[in-house]
Length: 106
Length: 113
Image (tube, rainbow over all chains, first blue to last red; front, side, top):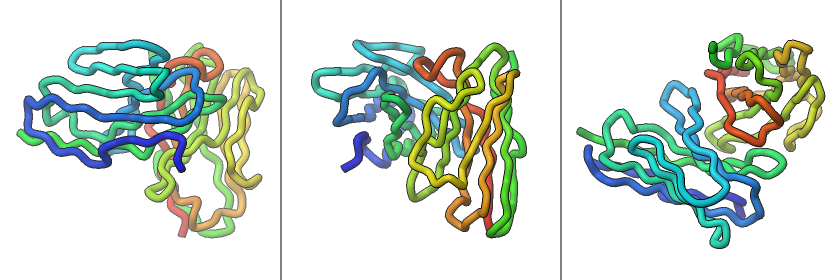
């Protein structure tokens, strides 16, 4: 069983929709990262969090340490949000989920 | 500040050859981590260097090695290339030992024929 599970694997949405991507993990962590990868391959770090909630623009990330669960929310989605979103847990190294491919259509 | 740079961006090699990839971190960053991304295995941690010392290593064979120089630039080397080594190799830097936001480079796409 993977230490990090993401759902859904694929997600399509209409512009303006509220989107939620989930990440569950099974081991103790020091932090959790949300990353965004565009088709060219480049990865951007969106959030690193160890408790509570963080917000940046239309993106919100939450984590529940007791339940070993994190969510990434995108409000008012836009076609430029189309990308692969990857959850990674921080232990002595980063362990990555398999990613959620999001497509937002106009 | 300039971002993380990786060279070369694309590389084609044949089985049995060796390859060296280079990563220049953001100025002032002392930690460099390397990752391999393949369609089958996703993103996997290769190793991390901090102040010229390897701090951690992932589950890869000894054909994968790396080093870090005094200016924090890092190289990784893969010897005796196999078809399965075809992947996107990413490096990321942070100012301290991995315990904070990492900044990723654009990657080197390696194709082994």
